[in-house]
Image (cartoon, rainbow, N blue to C red; front, side):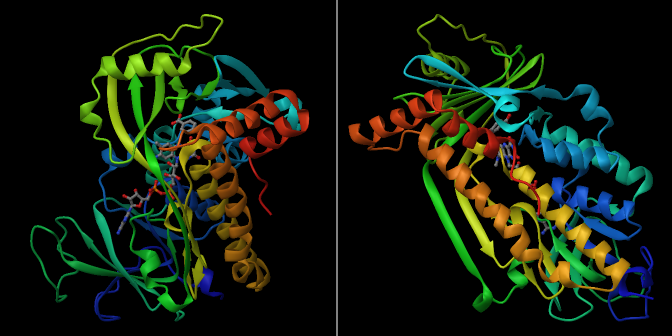
Length: 427
Ligand code: RFL
Ligand code: PHB
């Protein structure tokens, strides 16, 4: 038997191995889109897993984040049996609008990419669908279970130390008990850190092997959700001397809008009226386009950063999604990159099981990073083209406008943007 099928789902082994309360083939830390989709892909391939998530279900299902799924992400969700509601409720978008100098220019995706498009379907909904499937037919998904550390990543039995809220752990085990719960150990054949930017998994990789590439931006995005039909039927990315603005949506009745604001802005200092006035200014066009206003139901500020952690693998620990890389949201790439990583991992593990060859697992980090860097570049360029950096010079303003003019007048330039936006292929 291979290591993959030798392990049983959730074997409770009190006493068999000191401190081990569960065993599985793949220990997954984090139930964001990366961890949830990975659990689903592994389940479909007949490989057992346990997902540990520090927050509760309601929090994970309501955390407002991404809105755009690349064609490849849609295809993966559908093939994984998680696309039913997405196919019913998701909105197919065949283009975006670039707005600058009070003018509008549409980028037509199918015409420029040989038929590709994107789908507007919120990350909250992707997570709800995957959670429901996992709880109905998948392996254990433990909410309120915080991973404390990954140990033995360089061995063939890596372990995740974790604590479950209000859970006493195994009878007869030693450990600290209390309201916080007792420490437990998940023993695995592989651990995948899908625990986002603030997670613990990547700390298990020896520092001397790690290279971090990072850039922070001197601005953030103030995002609102509003109960009002979107003012345009496609996304609008606007470059304005006062800063960037984005019009997006969650459904035909709910708008999602963003404003570039200075780094460290407190969302509480922006009244709803001030947000709408500023959006109106930045979206203004010469042809009299109107912004619809409505009740604001959420308001928050997101910082912007680019971050890549190399390598994405150490021994039997693999990093996926935001745990390994962050992009500024301008390119709508974060969730889509996370999907690419876990597809790559699940394929590689299935390949090992089918052929006995670990070559794809060994190639994991390099395979993922090639696509990650294309998305980093794309997101960086979109951000640089559309945001106004504090202290930007008139020269820099003209360069931004020249870039946008080029997109509006050259098919080759527009094609490059359309290809990047609709997604870089998985290897
Ligand atoms: P997540 O979603 O951060 O999930 C990580 C999970 O791990 C849990 N966790 C732990 N669990 C157990 N033990 C621990 N010690 C743990 N530490 C953390 C966390 O509670 C959480 O549940 O990472 P994942 O799965 O890699 O997914 C990445 C995406 O969430 C992210 O890249 C996108 O949201 C980025 N993003 C966008 N991506 C797109 O593809 N298209 C978009 O349109 C888009 N728009 C956005 C975005 C991100 C935004 N913000 C808020 C950063 C718009 C915004 C405003
Ligand atoms: C969103 O709808 O939240 C969204 C859409 C496009 C982006 C970023 C965020 O580039």
